Length: 167
Image 1 (tube, rainbow, N blue to C red):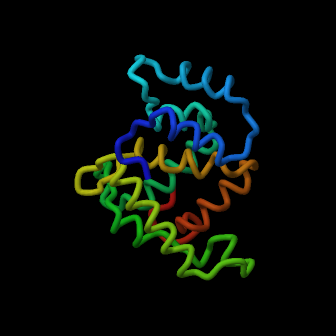
Image 2: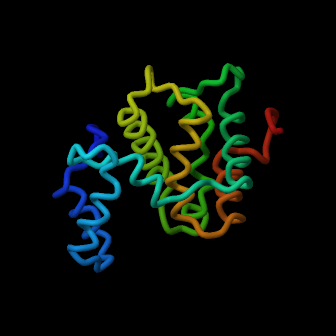
Image 3: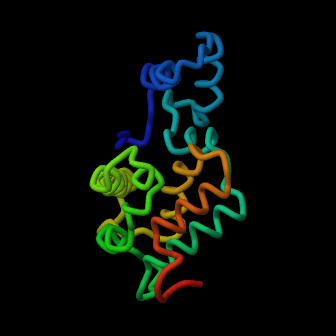
């Protein structure tokens, strides 16, 4: 949880080392200088993570937008954490279906990650715009190689194959 949104050199080094990438100190130094855009001895954590993740492709952006629209029942362009939790279906998560995790574990992890994201981003009243929702799911997307799996995950967990409000 990086509430300051800035990472100093020791924290930056620790993040890279925690991934066990085997990057030399010289390369860590070079990376830090590269990402310290304004020379203030800090790296903007969000920009750094976005550069590592890359951009969402059109398919994934479309699925994320559909999920957002599903949660935005009143179509005002905002969804709050309570609305998101009301639509999210942890029972349809692949890890629950395969028995790897329990439904309440997935739901609590989802709830915690939403709360942390909202706090980190200083979202007023914890209201997400589509752009915020895309940023949230960009991280999830970066951990999933296959577009089809990502699409199915969102379609199932956001109940996009059921009921009204389906595009």
